[in-house]
Length: 204
Image (tube, rainbow, N blue to C red; front, top):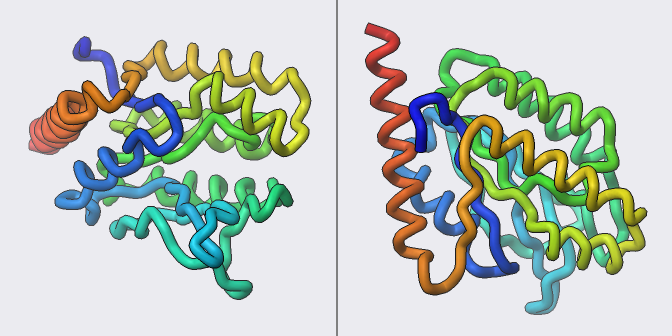
């Protein structure tokens, strides 16, 4: 990773462990983390939806049981609620500009929110802060699968390509698979320690 890199994103098959790697790596530093993480929701032991969790010094659990009173649900049994993601990323932007935010987490981006102009505008503003940013970006294969499953327009794939190019211009996208999961976890840990060390130096 070159010295100008300030973003590191993971990509790979569903349930290969991308979010777990990030969650484990950030756990010791969560007081310095702001951002947005996705929580998988289950009902009767079956995955039923996803929830947007705003991070401000405390990481959410990666999985939870569905309940009607839970806030932040943006996908539930093929029902999509884009306004929930728009509100969440807006609040995330407000937090990320604050001084106590030393690392930004964005897990997971590059999905149905690509079609939301308010979401993408806020996301690009977050990336323009040039703060260390760690996250997961949906692969084009997974994006295509999601598009078919919830009937999204095919043009979303081009938007996904554009986002990945944007992320690669400021850092790296690492492909995670079962064989390199431990190595990837070490690289993520090294990235966090490196950016925190550089942040300490800049404040002296």
